Image (tube, rainbow, N blue to C red; front, side, top):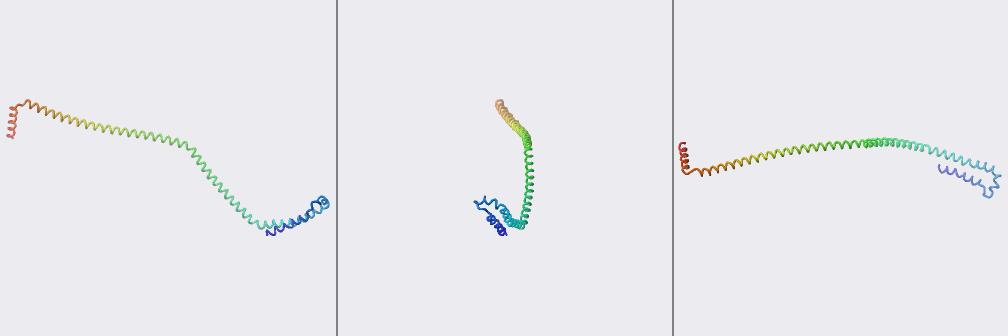
Length: 197
């Protein structure tokens, strides 16, 4: 069909060549053939114009439905793309708003973190001070107990040393003051006591 439509334009070219005026005679024949050339040109244009109308009609008949389908599908696709683009835009706008709200809340969060950090540092300092005070008290108590133990041991050693010195002094004194007669008398008294018992 396309071939027949193209063949319809061939007579237009031949008619145009028949009515062409040679270049040298153009001015001379202009007055005489002016009326004839317009009429001939109109007659020559009738068939090509009719062929063109038939060609356009065939194109319309053959291409109308596919073109309508294509345009309908394209319209549906464009609408679908527009809806998706609108959804993407609304999602992006919501995400942007969320990010902006987070950015606006960020200084407050930083200040809250600083305040909480300062509170935690104070609490930790108090806990460390309390632990240090408790450790100091424990060490002082342990030192007091060790000192008391050392004092008791020293007292005991002093008493033992004093007793040893007392016994030693008494022994030396007895040795100096007790004579052999006193010793004999003490032995006799001890023996009398043993016999009585």
